[in-house]
Image (cartoon, rainbow, N blue to C red):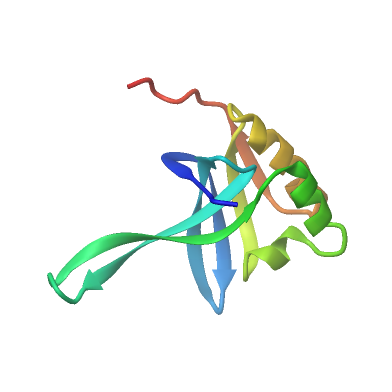
Length: 118
């Protein structure tokens, strides 16, 4: 499956790993959940910092998420402890993801905001 995501952030996660906290963006995409870690890195050729996006994980659809979480917690798929999650419930995929996060006992804050029209 090719994962295509937009620049639209539809939620955020804070994951703690080895004493460090990482902010992960949940992006609008062609799958149920697309978790991206944006970070800056020095380009050795230009000697300037540039933005990079690292795919942390994804769940293609609800059946994929359900199968993955039958024997494991969602935490196990994000390489650290999920400390909190913030979801925009305007996006129906987030409403599905919310159910699984809550079942795993993860702290979730929800809000509703329509995307700004360009």
